[in-house]
Image (tube, rainbow, N blue to C red; front, side):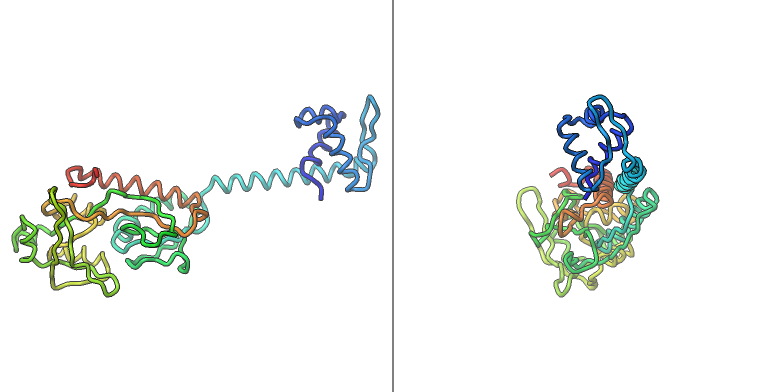
Length: 309
């Protein structure tokens, strides 16, 4: 098989009329250049350059082959430019999974903006709170709260300091009163999230001195975290939610954070993938954007305990 650098040397030597000048231009010794020319002539079974001590000229076979050598090099350069431009562009299909609440209320508008910036990118989005099987489901990456249980997954932090907060709608608090102590949660309707058959009714807090956990109860359960948020917005009770999921509602006054002096459970948001090879340019750009947006949301509530820890 003809080598790219051998073809390049032959074309340069033909253009310059000197094998030694072509060798200097390609930063190789005269001996290496001579061996390269000999190699290409042996592979073609023809003499391409007639050489003497003072001159170099194309043979008839060399003149005929030169046109094809130039065309081959031109096509190779075009192919390399095409690959380089493809690497600079964000294109292809981005397949990702995200939690229901975060996905619908934060990720969707962010993805719209991301695609406007990168119009050649196609997005396939799966929403749900179950852990995506990244080895079986048709997704490249998954966004998930909490520490990954599967140690074989690659986990990259998006919002490592995110925590849960207690929150309720002003309408609910006006009707039922605002709890000032954790023990008072027993007198309130708590909105519960369930994953599979497990109900998350044990809420944990830290009061600055010790860990406090209590089991809560209520009349509403859902396996969709966004439904729990919607119930809270409707004034149905108190929710224990990721700050990212309710930040915009709190900032707009639709929900109020209760007992903000308490340190609630950690809820770090991570980007998960099965292999580092899946960290393509679109994935890395999306990761940077998500980390920046989540940090911005967190900064809107600097008084919230735990964001600096």
